[in-house]
Length: 303
Ligand SMILES: Nc1ncnc2c1ncn2[C@@H]1O[C@H](COP(=O)(O)OP(=O)(O)O)[C@@H](O)[C@H]1O
Ligand SMILES: [Mg+2]
Image (tube, rainbow, N blue to C red; front, side, top):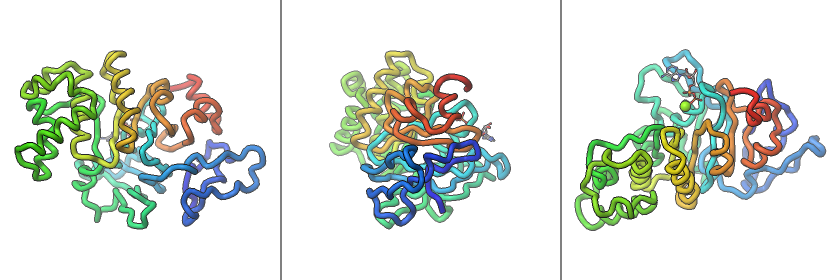
């Protein structure tokens, strides 16, 4: 089995021969074979992989295929951006990571997403035998539109901690504060923690949602176009925050704003018509992509 990045029928094959094969010692890139001067270094050479998508397909209602044979490595403590034109499957792929699609009948996954593939005890996120609830605890999500619960600022963040059995008390208060600080909103809300979350501005609400996601100490946070409903200043704060958070957590972010991908991400994956066309370090995707389709997309010729 070929791992990734795998070229699709549209892809240029030159950049696809250099991935370590399954079973290769991690961190040691195999010498490129037969690719001459086109060969590129393994973009993941110095990184640990937090999650590895293998031959993943996804079908809505059993028939509409919104993700096709995707292979993708998500490096630990880094930001990976998913870009591509509207309807290409970015949200669908993102939602596979915390089994959101299970909430609707008839949806079907094929292939696997291995969480922590490096330690030999990796768990397949999309395997039926894996608890979807546990995956949602370990992998948090931040949505396009801020969606605070109709509760106080404090309770929005405490919610997941209470679900995990933490009762009222100093530990709860400490962890709420820690999450609000982590989401760069503590100073703005510390004097009104009992006010409703929806009384905040849009940008503050989104940072509150990030605090809620952070509070449970997740391994990965999934962001689906988290700034599309925000003004430029609020957007800038979220982007800064995403950049800071990667030292604590692995981040996967969908954006249709290419400048945003260029600003916040370390790795960028370009999707088109349900397939993953190309993935590489972000500067390389934007300066010298291997695939013609990627080049056309990032230069604004379609999408
Ligand atoms: N709940 C659904 N049922 C059926 N098809 C869907 C559903 N959600 C999305 N799709 C289809 O799946 C494809 C990918 O959608 P999506 O993942 O939302 O794309 P993106 O996030 O890249 O805009 C589209 O063709 C879309 O119409
Ligand atoms: Mg989407």
